[in-house]
Length: 344
Image 1 (tube, rainbow, N blue to C red):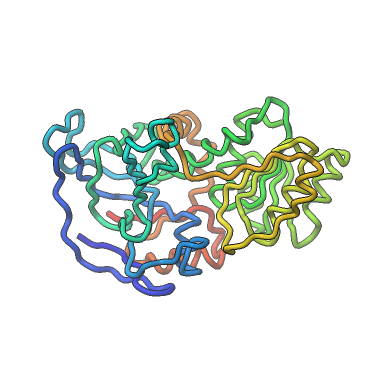
Image 2 (cartoon, one colour; image 1 turned 60 degrees about the horizontal axis):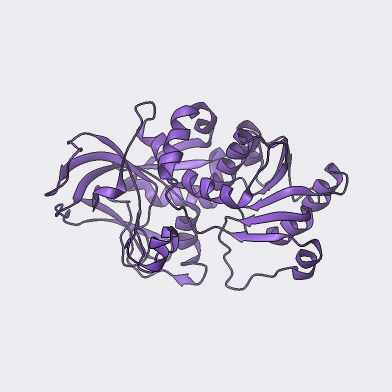
């Protein structure tokens, strides 16, 4: 099978590798489409995700959709050709965290696309049957790739805890930020500000539900949000960018006793924090670690509201040109929103 390896800093290559046959309880799937995630971009641009460095060669990609090829012994309910979403997190189900419902911080978690666990920029993958989910008939394979980042956003909503009519600010209009805006709108936010330096991404944010978009190069975003709320601040601010001091802008823009939720991943190992502003306001600060069994809900939301999410899918690029896809994302070229890598 063809595999796209990140084999050195900012360099991909296509190699041939054997496909693993499914064992007991496993399903082999043909990967057709994979979205490029912000963490993939961190690995490509920075050689690390925060304090976790790349280990070359490695296979990225963890937002996949495909079709069933064959099943291993003991697996029922799947047939060749079934369209599926492929969950990248493999849990142990036996540690303290799994047994208490915190599977996303499983002590023995394997996440396909991390060093040592190849991701989905490859033609075939073999997974536990529990990691294979039916793709709704209303979605094509490219749209189906949104289930994984949308599941992350749905997990973040547990901390956002939005009440009908509350206000929100989203910093960053990359794919996670755009999905966050869309879900906030569906959840009943009365007004949503979105802060984003790239013009075409501000336009996408408005299309997906932002009531006001702010260019941080043109104005101080936290001051503008405070002005727009009569100096009260928003009820909740979500940082999907974690760059250019956005965490502290979130703190400044949030009301007393409000919430700040960090969904993005900072590039820096140590992040400046205006702790005393946070302290005086008694703001609750939350961090999001991927998702925790929200994939089924994400697929259902995509099935119900496909027209709300489609505008962010702007480009499909074949596996052979994966390096071009990453460069396009890194440079914000050609109105890029979400890029799907076509493997088939």
